[in-house]
Length: 145
Image (cartoon, rainbow, N blue to C red; front, side, top):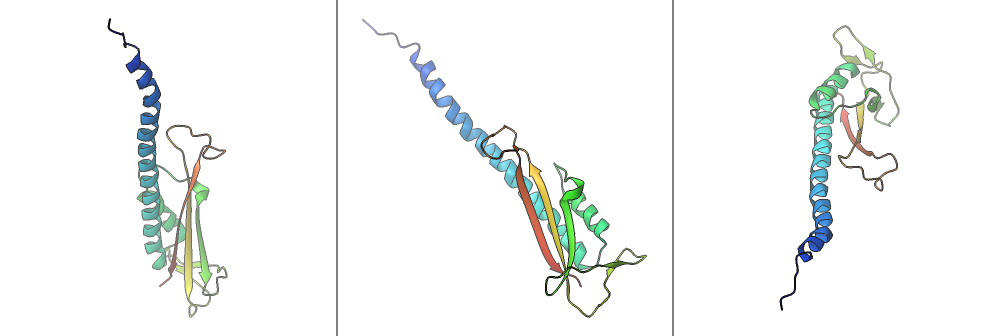
């Protein structure tokens, strides 16, 4: 007499399917995360190019925001700081041509651009962080010409 095994394949699928879905969604999530990080790095580098040629902070912020596609940065998450060669902060002066100048033009001046983004995964992963977000940061540090 032949044994019936109709339920065996359903039980096997019920055991294996969650693992396969976890791997597939993990790959998709990692791809999204990597895409957001690369986009953030690109936007910060575009802002750093503008900052190197004395663009005003509002112009730099606009360039960063326009370089990002697919997501948006919250207004307070773009930080632009001007520093001297020793790392001390400097206050810039602005002119009518929307350029940045400093009191002592003979000093080397650097601009530090930091952009933060709260990445929200597609699926809720409560064990990753308490808030459900992953903080992505990108920074550029360039000499002002």
